[in-house]
Length: 407
Image 1: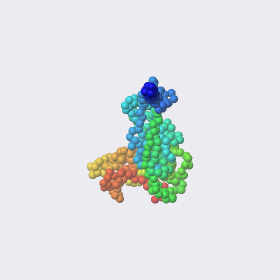
Image 2 (image 1 turned 120 degrees about the horizontal axis):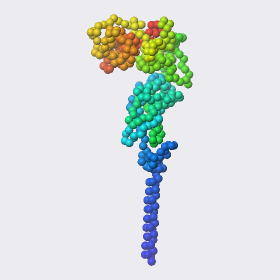
Image 3 (image 1 turned 180 degrees about the vertical axis):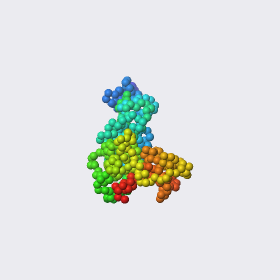
């Protein structure tokens, strides 16, 4: 009897153990069926269930919009507070793997950082449009991007001047819709900044070399009062803190489209009417703009021929005269354009911006200097590196020649 009872007990425990194992297996199987649904995010309102119309556990298809050439977005590579900062943004609808959907209502979203100011939007060769410049957020509408579509645009801003740190960290987003859902993909842009480590002196020199203390107290060359801090620069008018002058309208558009600070420098006057000619003018560090309403666009804004007015034209030379390699002879004025200046002349406006050469190059204080009708080209002589071409401050010099600024 003892043996029998012991055997029966073993059978009971064995049966219970079997039931426990079966229960565990059933429980794990149920968990395996439930867990994907628990972890999966709910579809957006009105969107299809994950896996397409029939649901299921297959991956949800989507379009794939991305930024390309992220390392080429900023120009310059190191931001200068208060100066121009250009974004070159390339967006691609990448058809990798099975990504075959189009992105509808696609847009770029960029929020300006602190005191950063919007200046200009350039669609380049795309048909993308700037939808909004109100507040601090810009939206660039791209419409529908199909797999393989590839476009590039530019946004010009003024870098913020109220950051006391070496890096600007900025968010930028791509938004779109497709058959699966609505997407909001974010990226982080990092821009090194030039940060001043010293307190500026009470009288801050302008880029032109003038100081606010020796400028006229009245008239178009007098320093202008900055607008209130809460007053934003608009698309058509903004205040240049570097020289304490305003830039607006057709002159602002021309400035932005023809090299801005690099080619023309900052404005050193307000807009005013010249008594002698009756023309509307504005002086810049490297030139003077004239407004000619009688001309058809785009020739209503022209650059004054300062080289001739300052008496820098010299006698013509024959086309068989000696010149450095790469020089180009212009019979219109009978002078060679020095080979070290030819590429810069062509890439930054050519004849329209600078005019023909009116003298041969000469050596002044270790620099090669050459006058054209509207500019003075300068480059370091005998440099062991590729020399940087610079333009002389002929607008400042002409203002002093006219008596608008102290000599």
